[in-house]
Image (cartoon, rainbow, N blue to C red):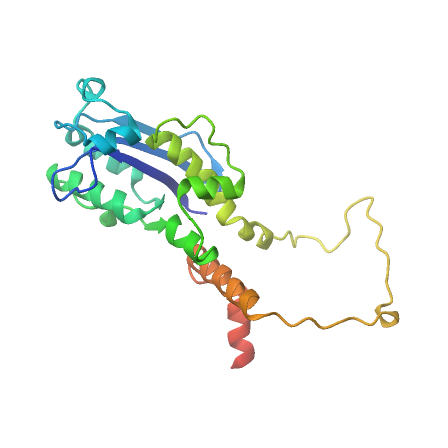
Length: 240
């Protein structure tokens, strides 16, 4: 199984190209879909003020950040931590754009050169729940993920919430992990034979909305499994 890093940033504003900077990086590590505790959390001195609207979101004042390290001084350490991992990010283009700009300023290579893949949970959620709100807050509410202690947006806290959301978004994969080591029934299990010929079983055809939802789930599973969804592979063989 791959090493996953669930990642989030906080920034001074919305435009890396116009000089806004990363002020907080939060990373949570998953291995075999389990939290490892090997996390990363850093505040940075951005050498500039946060925009007023951004400050209302993250609450990280200039005074608080003044004595924190500059991104460039820890750039190589961040690369080594992320190296080879698949990154799980909500609205990935935003965080990737900011991190790549910070690496560029520090004379370091972009993310794509040292991570295996970037998975955008916002794109995943839009496939599974088309037409619905798919912000991190909305997904937390949908999956019952507790965010009651979230007064401000924080990179580490948001990464922790997103890790829980990601497990819920991809939980269907767990049903595919079937133990086929033994055909023997578990101890204490009673198997009762039922004669189905005595029942008239109705045939229920899936509707257009159900087929669309099914296709969205298969697309998401394809992305998560690297295109190895057995259902689709078997369907293609049957057609051939």
